[in-house]
Length: 75
Image (tube, rainbow, N blue to C red):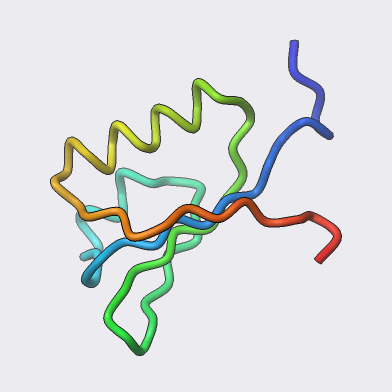
């Protein structure tokens, strides 16, 4: 069983703006739009299986993944 302190915070940068309808697929994530035309998904992922689930969802929606960043909780 995973402990709460094993969770990781991630940011996914996607090309173009993600519409509200597509944002529903990422419930629990904060969705931001940047000035350079990207969408940033920011949220907590509990384990590698959940990370792969998000990546699969991005692929299935036909979105272009620009980058993934793991965020240090102490930042």
